[in-house]
Amino acid sequence: MKNNIKNVRESKGMTQRECADILEISLRAWQTYEQGVSEPKQALLCKIADMFSVSIDYLLGRETGEPETIDKLVGEFNMSALEKEILDNYLSLPKDMRGDLMEFLQKSVQKVMNESGE
Image 1 (cartoon, rainbow, N blue to C red):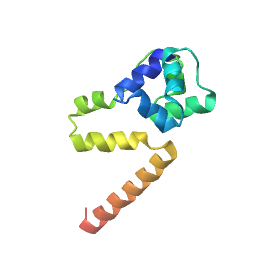
Image 2: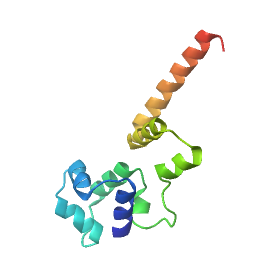
Image 3: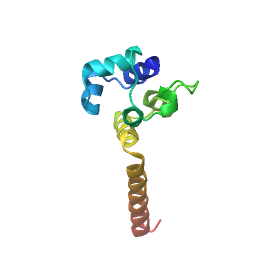
């Protein structure tokens, strides 16, 4: 698990301190997780997975593939900085909020299309 937690943290460009602060744990506790000295309890493991938008299986080393990174998508689809920021923020939302946001966007697009006669 230690390498996956460290790898995903580094891929997000976050420091150990930032992760510890977001999760409201000590820096030392975070460091022990990255070093494999100890493992987070289930509730904290869920928070870590949500924070990085990866599965718990990935953090535990049960998946062989790497998670898709935003940078890979940006390169593949030639995204602007604004598009990258929007996607990154969307993926950082809890899953239930993502659905609400998509519904809101679909209604907004439909309204504009109806008003413009498209």
